[in-house]
Length: 242
Image (cartoon, rainbow, N blue to C red):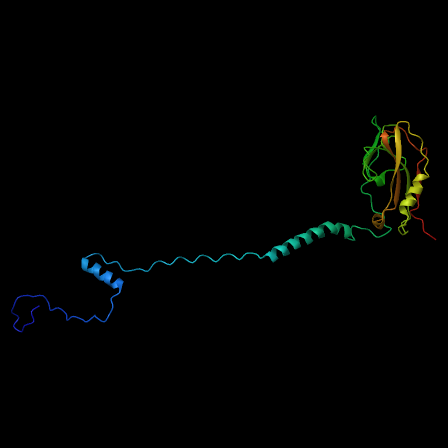
């Protein structure tokens, strides 16, 4: 506006501000761009620095090799304990001289039918001297007891029970062979017979095993009669050495 005292005079452009000396102040590129934008009438957009990338989550620590070795060793030890515990536990192994129960007694048919079967799945400890056996696999496996006039593969011809209080004989195998060799067998018309012997070892002796069995087994053909007039049984279970 006019600033003369009388107020007269035409309207004129307001007084321009005095120029400021900016010669000594450098102008930044950002400021120059801003000024150009403002002078050209464009909408002013403030300068924003580039957006920094978000920090990635820290990687999860990996188990070192030593940890895997420790875990593997623990698994091996655990499996070993489960496998060996039944063999080493005192609850499973009876003291020396104690007779281990053979399990439930298998019932016998006092009057066998036409098949001649007396009992099935009879464990070796429950086979009686003189029994004739079919379904026979080995001296340590269950078998079927039949009448001896029926076809069969084996017969228990002799048994010896050693004293429960005696220490394990060092010559057990030789003593078992001598016992079985003294049993006289009748000839078999339709088979080649071999006597197989079952006797205690040091390990089974410590568990209470005192039984020596002599089984006449047909290795060629089958048997259809008893091989002994009277089976041999020596029971020294309660014998006490002097």
